[in-house]
Amino acid sequence: MKIEWMNASVGRRSFLKGATVLGAATVLPMGWENRATAAEEGVLRVRSYGDVSTLDPAHSVGVVDEEVHAAVYNKLIQYKPGDEWGWQLDAASMIEQVDPTHIKFALRDDIGFTNGFGPMTAEDVKFSFERVVDDATNSPNKPDMGPLNSVEVTGEREGTIVLKEPFAPIWSIALPYITGNILSKAAVEAAGGRVGTDPVAESGPYLRDSWSPKEKTVLKRNPDWKGDVPAWETVEIYPIDDENTAEIAFEAGELDVTRVSLGSVQRYRESVPNGGSLVEKPSLYYVWLGMNVDHPKLQNQKLRQAIQYAVDVPSILEAAYFGAAEPSTGIIAPGLAGHRPASLVPAAANFEKAAQLLAESGESNVTLTLDTLNKTTFTTTAQIIQATLAQIGITVEVNVLESGAFWASGENENLQLVLNRFSMTPDPYYATAWFTPEQIGKWNWERFNSPEFNEIHNTAYQVTDVAKRAEMYQRAQDLMEESGAYRFITHEATPVVHAARVIPAMRPDGLSLLRYFGKAS
Image (tube, rainbow, N blue to C red; front, side, top):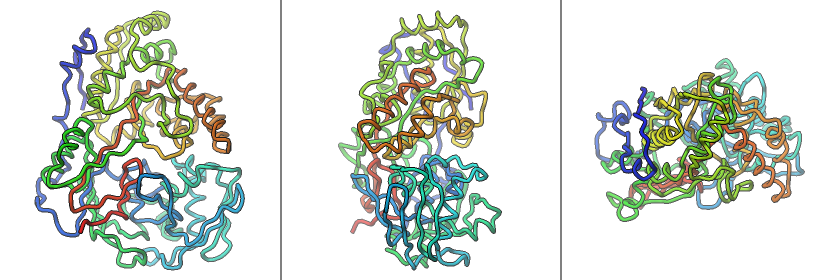
């Protein structure tokens, strides 16, 4: 779907008065109208912002897949739900870092795989971890494993993780997140080396019962699970891109848990329908306007810098985020090592400087396309970017995409401008990992290629001096901004509402850990 708005020469305040919220094209998942409205006992209904794309962690696209993976697979360790970042044992009965590059582990003796693939062994751990870093796998999540060298199997259920060099994020990213999921070696090999959207062997407290594309994913309790029994017999996950649409479903009693729009926070602070509750969490997400530096229209750095200065972040935050989010200074959120106190380009637009840079670029009659996800917050943001760039004579056509098409944009060499939003984990290494040359054509949609940035990414994770490490990541963000390929916007916030019958289990940044959800008595 393509939407084009008329350009108008208006100031920030007059523009905001006329800004429209483009949510009319957003609909509930297919088949939703056929659901009964009454909540079913034992069924937890949650909303995800996208549909699951794969059950293969090596090829996961991020949070929407991991939400399912974390329920049907096991890791050596899992994130702890709560307000502080931490981890707890999962498939491991013991795990210990014996020196900077060696981690010993032992597996529980009561975890088995479905479909007759037997008990989980150290060989499965070795296979799962080494597969991610194997070039033949072509995993976009390879950076999560950092300098993994190998896993040495020392017994049926014992082994040692061997790193090429120290890697601080192994405890905050590699093991408790996407790449930490342990698959059955025999099952994956029997499937030809890759898992699709149907499971080949599961081991977690839930099993994937069914999947209706763009409609819902259903998880059922694993009858052979020997750990703590999940409180909910069934979990239904509904892919709904738009928070406003999800709020309608929640208030109608069709959802038990959903993130909500920032524009609704004040209303929910006053009262949550049906006796529910509002939980407000800080966010690690980062939102930015990216520019494909390889596209013929955007190879001029002065032009890209003109665009940076013409985008007015305060207008975006006022209209699209209802004043409930703060401007970001980069890709690393406050509270994490490497957060910058200020960006190089101020949040407020400087049209005079933007016009000067455009003149210096020698470009004229510039017309660009801006791709964005079909979600009210982003379409509103795109409209504001379109209007503010018009102030310096740049015409923007907004291309609104559904989730599947949008998240395939890494392969789109014709991409020009893109409004993007990535998830994050509590370590700056995860932020810089996606903007290296290796990620061009995968997650580095701007095709940004800086040798200095790459060197920082490849060395900062080894640094144990917190202040020095922070300084390195701050410099990395300077390089991104100096390239002109990035206009940083916000880290958002994470407001979540849940029904009275639910005790939510979330990471400190508000993302769900479904296996730990409880029932209110």
